[in-house]
Image (tube, rainbow, N blue to C red; front, side, top):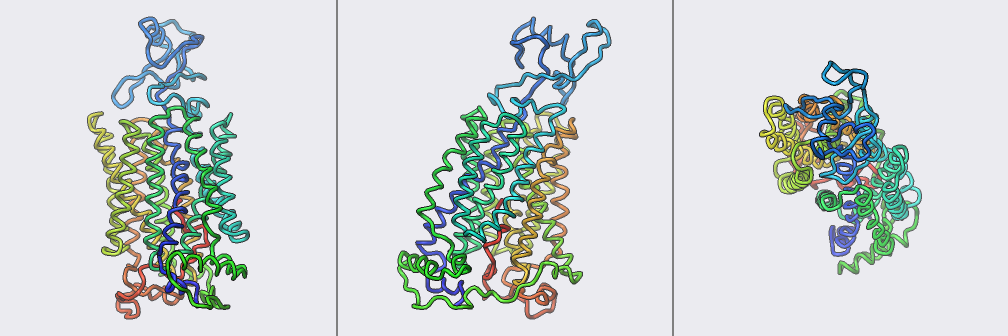
Length: 553
């Protein structure tokens, strides 16, 4: 029998699979914490130039003498309609006070420690001329995801899912703890790069194992539920950051507990599908019969033959570029993946740039993201992939663009409007990122599905690498327009991707394409082979889960 046929006897999501599913979703909690802890550890507090020769200078004014010295040393500027002391310039001493004085850049700063005791920014002075280093640090983390998906994906195919999972756990813990002691920027970004690689290895290895133990009819459901473990990690890191204001301690607290994941070595099995691909049939069968025993069912005496893993002929992704219809469809899918990833991570990182309380904003954003996944669970199989994805993209994009009005034409009293619109954008981006995974997998024909999802994942990684630079446009550009610019860019590309997705055919309750010719005909009006078919599965039954493309991060 085919490998997926085993689940007709074993059960698609029995007791054994549920236990494994819960255990293997736990790594998602730790990856979420490491991915977005930068909202706090790389936060830029209010700051100004330090007074030359004053060793006990502080950001807050200590008294009248301190204020007089500040007025004589630090120039004023207007920011958001309010006069504040300049954060990067200091008066030269070549002109007496009271005359037109020239300014120069300073080389030392004092920081407001009312929110954070310290951050990476305050310790390494990543401000003013070096403010672009924050974007670079976050972008390097995303580059780690890209390299990790390529390298660890190959490693997983060679040595197995479980050894790769253990390797990723050790790398995750080691680099996470090491980051807390990074002495300089170079060491910090190298460790974050490796941590990003471990994050995707950790998430994907566990995801692949559990998906290869779940029946085809439950894979869409399982792929959605794991998103809530991701959200749980975000809630945890937000709560920890509220109580732990020292970035070293926060980094250690989210990294050290991941040591517990080593216990998965004794609790979870190797992927039976991978074991079969390596000719280790007895080991694969032993795992499946143990699962059957826990599920209280009986498997046939003979499970495997030479055709068990034969999923039919495969083709190259380049064949999707052989006709105008497939070319346009593929490019739209890739662009939607890029935008969904860029906006999802960009809005997550941009929480620290919004006004108001950073902890409250971060928590609201997490609630909004969880709500988006709940909506997808209930509506994805009712409204369809195309309608829900396009609607999510357009709703989120328009909300982001609309922030230009309260930022440019409103005062601090309208800050709540900007935050609300940003959260609507986050809702749309979160929903779209979850939907495009399922939508794209169903649009690619069986013969190129694996390659197509790999290309989609690569596009998502590029979007992730770009996202920190867009999120920090406000810091780099400055002014009121600079504050609105990140959301404006996120909104514009999201609306564009949402409109383009209208050219994609609906896949809900349709017979999905298997060959390139099927894909060309798929979605064409009047083609009876692809009209509504309420008997088909809601997700592809032959999806390959051994590719590192299939992942949240």
